[in-house]
Image (tube, rainbow, N blue to C red; front, side, top):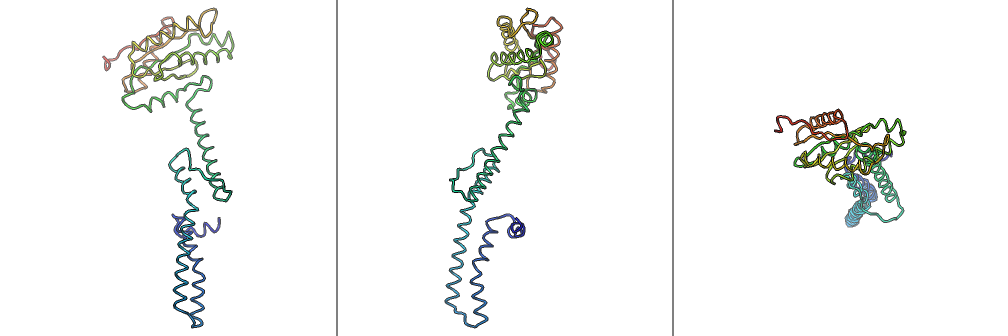
Length: 284
C-alpha cells in the first residue's frame, strides 16, 4: 500500500502506464550500468550498446503487453461494475491473486446488489399482504410513461374492520387483510395496480379505464365478497366501501383526495357500496 501511494504521482490516472514506467526503469538498469561502466573505463563498444538497447526495448514491450493482458480481467470487472451490469465475464479458477481479487469483488458486488434489492423491496412492498405499499404504488405510477398515466383511482376501506380485531383478534385481522389483498389482486386486470394504502385501506389504479368500468369491477369484487366471504363478523360477510375518481394525467394528489372524499361518502351512505367522485369543471 505504501509503495502504491508513493508512486501515485506517476501517471495517477493509468495503472498500466505506471507499471510500464516502473518496468521500463527496471529493465533498463543493465543498460544504464553498462553505459556507466563503459564511460568510466573507456571500453564501451557501439555494437554491444546498440544490441543491448534493442534487447532492452523489446523486453520492455513484452513486459508491457504481458502486464496489460494480466490486468484485463480487473479492467473488465471494473467496467462491468461501473456500467451497473449484473454479470461479469467468467474467469477460470487459476488460484492466483488476480483471480482471488476478481472473485472477491464479484461476491461483494453480488451481495451489495442483493442487499439493495431487498431494501428496495422492503421500501415498496407491504410485508403482511405481499402487495405494494403506498410508496410502491406512487413509485409505480410515477414511472409510467405519459400516455399510460390516465385511468381511475380507487380508495377502498374494509367495513367495520375494528370489529374484526376486537371480536376475533389481531391475528384474524391480519389474515383478513392478507386475504382481501389476494382477492383484489386476483379480480383486477394485470395492468391495474393494487396497493395497501395504510391500515385497512387499499388503493387501486385502474389503468386506461373509465369510471363505469372501474365501478363495475369493484361491484363485481363486492359481489364476490358476499357470495364467497373472506370472513364474517357477527354472522355478516366482511364487506368494503370504495371511492372512485377519474384521473386524466394531471396532479395525482388531487385525484387521490377526490377518491378519498368519495370513499367518505360511501361510508356515510351505509357502507358496502362504491361511490364516484363528484365531477369537476375541468373534466366536464
